Image 1: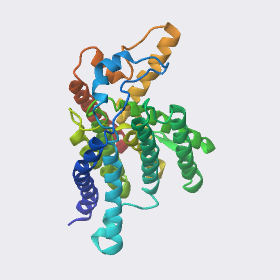
Image 2: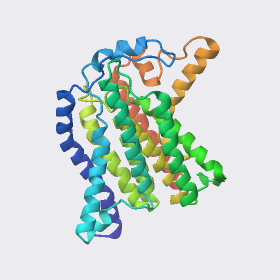
Image 3: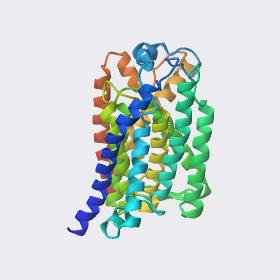
Length: 355
């Protein structure tokens, strides 16, 4: 086996493993989710102003009372099991298994830390969401505070421990930020976390995140960050396993334990694939993750329009629900978003490789 083909196998094997783990784990998880009725006791949503979200409730309220939450457990549990499996094999067995172990300080400790912290805070939110009578999880301000604290620590680690104080700009070099790198890291993390609201239609978020992480696997591999590429492929494989059961009609929903884990992890991956990998991981993030940023933009524009012009810009925000309201079937919204993500991912990868 040539060196290049073995390096490619280091990406493919964790991808297949995490997918298989997710497929095997799901029946066990869904048994408990349905047995203990892990869904909202009070279905429906409210707007940011605290009023009833009538358009959303017309579309999805009925299913909220019967579809389990916490499906995101499949994703982060599959990633952690896969990472632990290869780490243990590398410790017990010498040879090729050592090189299959992608857990290391230089490239994957921080993404794994972000995944664990996001999964933990999100799990607490979901647990409260399904156990409290009024179906309220952790308030938005406390979840945002958690994102600020976790991303602030990771941003400080990049700056103080890894010596990163700049971001790369395609074709232009680096943009020095100095100590302002830390608040910039926090800002990116908050924006990406806000995009987690894309988890609103069966199959939508799973497909999008799986494609995004696969795109970053390609970028990291091209930059010889093989461990990071293997990690991204592992996340993608686990997300595809989740998607297998989330395709309409969804067996469960990702909810906060999945979306917070993935968005925090994506932020760290993008920064790791930037100056550390002599790449442009941050600059191409809005391209590769175009549907996520469009989702955040639609929410911001909706609030701006209502405050300034006293009317809505969209029938409903986020944008994917607007398409449902104007008559697109949910499966059409989902598949078109997948297509856009694939095209955007290819375009972002191409820019990253050209840089």
